[in-house]
Image 1 (cartoon, rainbow, N blue to C red):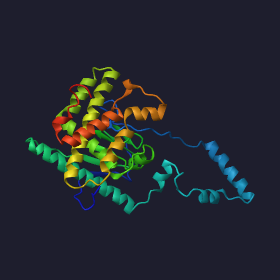
Image 2 (image 1 turned 60 degrees about the vertical axis):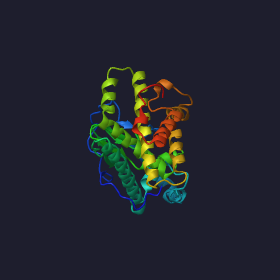
Image 3 (image 1 turned 135 degrees about the vertical axis):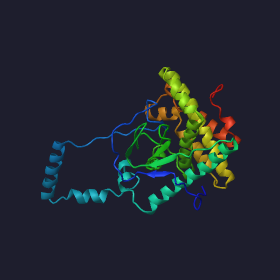
Image 4 (image 1 turned 60 degrees about the horizontal axis):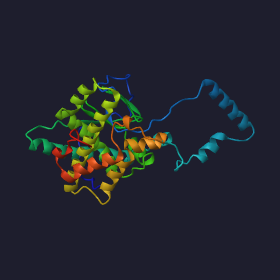
Length: 308
């Protein structure tokens, strides 16, 4: 993407470095907003007894002339074998994080340009969303936001929540590398904001209260595929602005391939349960993104009529 030097959005709320504050907020959708699915992570800590045992072992080995701190320090060089948690802890501040912030601000600004023009052409005003940057976890009206839940949009406060460490996980865990794949993530969540403004999300919320889980999942898939189509419309606009580089569309399509419900289920459990789909298959997600890109027309993103 040729994103450097372009306008950056001011609609950013940077909570990195802040504590997450209170507990879970109200969740009008019965889940953490509208989000991209991703695998969770197990957490845990050492018991007091285990800590005492390790301390004893350390001093016994040191008495034998073995300094385990030095051994561990030499072994952990932060290479390809280092864990996801280590990467979070060792991310340097400064230009690397500043570059990521500038990228997010620029992509958000480009979505603002796209949707302001589309709404204005229909005689409507586009109310721009706020994007919340956080590290680790933070609170939202839709529930606790964390790196384990992935990026999501909360209709209760019209904000997109993003821990930029997800970009690293997108590449490492989902094999979806590239800045345009990252940009798609933002554009997809902004697509949910458009749905909120046009009444799609409120209607989804109303209907799902009287539905069983299977029916609610089927409706959720249609909501998600429309957001994918809207992300494709943004990609078309970005292409016209000369932002796209060779291979960018392939990055976005690969991201969709990697985060389809069927692909994620096969990866995590080895088999597929279609009734549990709530975002769409890889093929569906690629299809609707391409439809938005090829048409550049909101009217082409009607995922609620007919087959998907």
